[in-house]
Length: 339
Image (cartoon, rainbow, N blue to C red; front, side, top):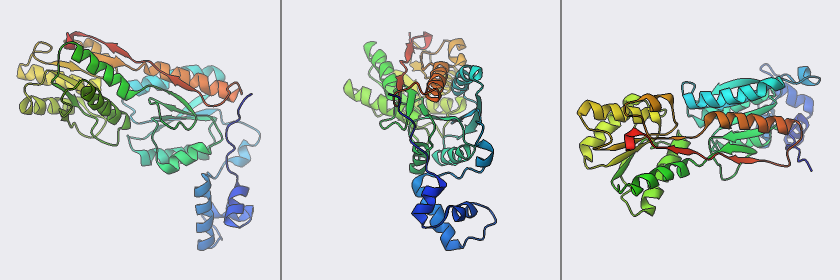
């Protein structure tokens, strides 16, 4: 039996909660309104409590669909997220669905603002990056009445559909690889901020894996505000070499920071991988063409987008029985930077 999406709250629901008429609710959402301040405040609070988004284009949408899918990404110059959007677009295009893209800059408050703006335009579905959101953003998504897909993560309490992987688990695989080589003095660069929750999960995965092996898990080097740049990766590596020179291997939060770390070693005459091993995350193009090539983790970003699109189409066709979770198995790619 097909499970229908949760019904979105209506203007009538807001009116009942606020103790006013639907017409008063409609007037309260207009810029120039005759509704008193106290009444308007009560209406807006009721709307917020319900997760209601005023549909400014409702009169135009009663007889037609918008034919777009809203997507939020934390960075517009990140090749991985670009690949995810490409995978989405290619699978949605035959269905006549287009993407409306929003850029959050790793800011959950900005994500919340974008979600509200998107929902005002009544998308057919919405795809968000990550599984952690502000309470209000979560409420808006839960009450959107459309397919919601969380990507690049495996949230503990999914809102709807999920296409992602364990960031902590992926880094655990990297730690296991290094420990199997006989290394114990391993450091981690990046992931020290709450802005990049997936980076923070990678850092947490590193700590947990090191502790599980009975190794020192305190070699943690901050690398600035996400997205971590190559320059910041180089600076972090320089600090690591100066303060913890006996470090045997370094795991970086991304391939960009890993490339910066690699070039800093070359600048200082530190041989990679004879003196220190370096690994990144993401399988960016730069990882495969660097000298030596970077060991990294492939999260299959295009596949995340394509499978998200498949879920959306199936949901719109009423073919899904409840929320679906698709777990992506990441791939550890051993290259020249780690022997």
